[in-house]
Amino acid sequence: MANVSHSIVSTISSRLRSITIECVVDNIVPGQEEGNADLLESLGAGLRIGFPAELGPVIVSLLEDGGAKWLLMSEAARTHGRPGAAEAIANLAAELAVCPKLTHNTAQ
Image (tube, rainbow, N blue to C red; front, side):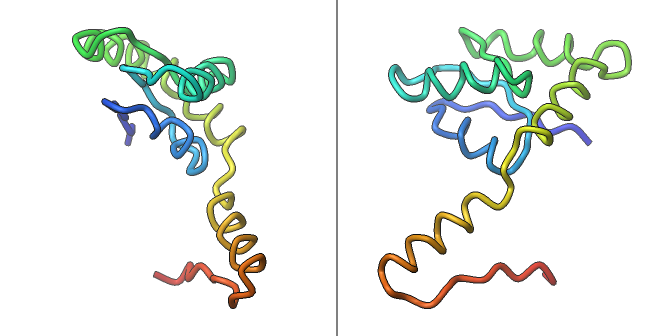
Protein backbone atom coordinates (compact mmCIF):
# COMPACT_ATOMS: atom_id res chain seq x y z
CA MET A 1 0.00 0.00 0.00
CA ALA A 2 1.40 3.38 -0.97
CA ASN A 3 1.60 6.26 1.47
CA VAL A 4 0.86 9.67 -0.03
CA SER A 5 2.04 12.57 2.07
CA HIS A 6 1.12 16.17 1.32
CA SER A 7 1.83 18.98 3.75
CA ILE A 8 0.71 22.57 3.92
CA VAL A 9 3.53 23.33 6.34
CA SER A 10 6.38 21.06 5.41
CA THR A 11 7.85 20.42 8.83
CA ILE A 12 6.55 16.94 8.15
CA SER A 13 9.41 16.27 5.69
CA SER A 14 11.97 15.68 8.43
CA ARG A 15 9.47 13.61 10.42
CA LEU A 16 8.76 11.39 7.45
CA ARG A 17 12.45 10.67 7.06
CA SER A 18 12.57 9.52 10.66
CA ILE A 19 9.84 6.94 10.01
CA THR A 20 11.03 5.93 6.52
CA ILE A 21 8.02 7.04 4.45
CA GLU A 22 8.37 8.44 0.95
CA CYS A 23 6.68 11.80 0.43
CA VAL A 24 5.57 14.55 -1.90
CA VAL A 25 5.83 17.99 -0.29
CA ASP A 26 4.50 21.40 -1.30
CA ASN A 27 4.43 24.90 0.23
CA ILE A 28 7.95 24.75 1.60
CA VAL A 29 8.64 27.12 4.47
CA PRO A 30 11.76 29.14 3.55
CA GLY A 31 14.84 28.29 5.56
CA GLN A 32 15.38 24.94 7.23
CA GLU A 33 12.41 23.27 5.54
CA GLU A 34 13.91 24.03 2.12
CA GLY A 35 16.94 22.06 3.22
CA ASN A 36 14.76 19.17 4.43
CA ALA A 37 12.92 19.05 1.10
CA ASP A 38 16.21 19.26 -0.81
CA LEU A 39 17.58 16.40 1.27
CA LEU A 40 14.56 14.19 0.62
CA GLU A 41 14.80 14.91 -3.11
CA SER A 42 18.56 14.33 -3.25
CA LEU A 43 18.14 10.98 -1.49
CA GLY A 44 15.41 9.99 -3.92
CA ALA A 45 12.95 9.63 -1.03
CA GLY A 46 10.72 12.58 -1.85
CA LEU A 47 9.56 15.09 -4.41
CA ARG A 48 8.79 18.75 -4.09
CA ILE A 49 5.91 20.29 -5.99
CA GLY A 50 5.15 23.97 -6.45
CA PHE A 51 1.38 23.96 -6.12
CA PRO A 52 -1.22 21.62 -4.59
CA ALA A 53 -2.85 21.22 -8.01
CA GLU A 54 0.28 19.38 -9.16
CA LEU A 55 -0.19 16.60 -6.59
CA GLY A 56 -2.64 14.48 -8.62
CA PRO A 57 -0.58 14.37 -11.82
CA VAL A 58 2.61 13.72 -9.85
CA ILE A 59 1.02 10.77 -8.02
CA VAL A 60 -0.30 9.38 -11.31
CA SER A 61 3.21 9.64 -12.76
CA LEU A 62 4.74 7.89 -9.74
CA LEU A 63 2.28 5.01 -10.02
CA GLU A 64 2.78 4.39 -13.77
CA ASP A 65 4.58 1.22 -14.85
CA GLY A 66 3.41 -0.68 -11.81
CA GLY A 67 4.51 2.09 -9.46
CA ALA A 68 8.19 1.72 -10.40
CA LYS A 69 9.09 5.32 -9.46
CA TRP A 70 7.11 5.11 -6.22
CA LEU A 71 8.83 1.85 -5.30
CA LEU A 72 12.23 3.48 -5.86
CA MET A 73 11.23 6.38 -3.60
CA SER A 74 9.97 3.96 -0.98
CA GLU A 75 13.21 1.97 -1.05
CA ALA A 76 15.25 5.19 -0.77
CA ALA A 77 13.15 6.28 2.22
CA ARG A 78 13.76 2.95 3.97
CA THR A 79 17.47 2.98 3.11
CA HIS A 80 18.12 6.50 4.36
CA GLY A 81 15.51 6.69 7.12
CA ARG A 82 16.25 6.59 10.81
CA PRO A 83 13.21 4.97 12.43
CA GLY A 84 14.74 4.98 15.93
CA ALA A 85 15.84 8.62 15.82
CA ALA A 86 12.95 10.11 17.79
CA GLU A 87 13.32 7.59 20.61
CA ALA A 88 17.10 8.09 20.73
CA ILE A 89 16.66 11.86 20.98
CA ALA A 90 14.01 11.47 23.69
CA ASN A 91 16.32 9.18 25.68
CA LEU A 92 19.21 11.62 25.34
CA ALA A 93 16.96 14.45 26.53
CA ALA A 94 15.82 12.29 29.46
CA GLU A 95 19.46 11.53 30.36
CA LEU A 96 20.37 15.18 30.22
CA ALA A 97 17.37 16.02 32.39
CA VAL A 98 18.25 13.13 34.77
CA CYS A 99 14.97 11.35 34.11
CA PRO A 100 14.35 7.62 33.62
CA LYS A 101 14.77 6.36 30.06
CA LEU A 102 11.74 6.14 27.84
CA THR A 103 11.08 2.74 26.32
CA HIS A 104 9.21 1.93 23.19
CA ASN A 105 6.73 -0.92 23.54
CA THR A 106 6.93 -2.88 20.27
CA ALA A 107 4.36 -5.45 21.46
CA GLN A 108 1.42 -3.18 20.61
